[in-house]
Length: 292
Image (cartoon, rainbow, N blue to C red):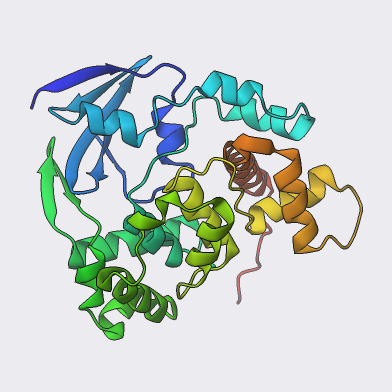
């Protein structure tokens, strides 16, 4: 297969794909194989260029947001120790433009799950309900459409390790496939109304809604607050204050991080996830006596 070279300045492919935005890209050779909507894609990085499978150049540029002015975005971050450290650690990380339904469905399945578990669910759904393709020697699967999942039943979805999330995913798939939830038509809504519409869907609360707004609707001000980010915000920005209400956290994020708050959130999230994981791994393990 012929690979086409495209420019990718200020970009880190591995960091971006492993930052908790998407969950289906798999290592393949010296790059990654996955799907952009229904297109099978192989991509690898060579310094400030990407090599992509034939014909996918335009789709890859758009998907990986190579047009975002990343240097200017990062330069506009508030000047504080936590964000400076996250920015340095996450150089080249970009907010991916994801397909609306795929992003919404994936984050509905993410509730109370770690990244590794979300990846397992995504793969199970894709393999059972999605179309398959081969690219650069790797088998990849498209995320199933809302109509395809709307025709499933809860047991079939639970078999993909969704647990209680199966009901929410099924109900939302039916709303989307029927047109009652017009995801594409919601693109023109202002942030507050868009968030409210998303939160009306089964399985969608403020955190999932903000993830979908950031990663699918490209509302770069959206600031999802999950357990990781709440911990970072309280530790880095509120000192020893014991009680910080959810509303106070949201108000702080909206006012402090500004128009590119979503980028700041993603950098803080990925930096915290990685550094905390390293600290856990560095701790000596306690030796458990062997029973006699």
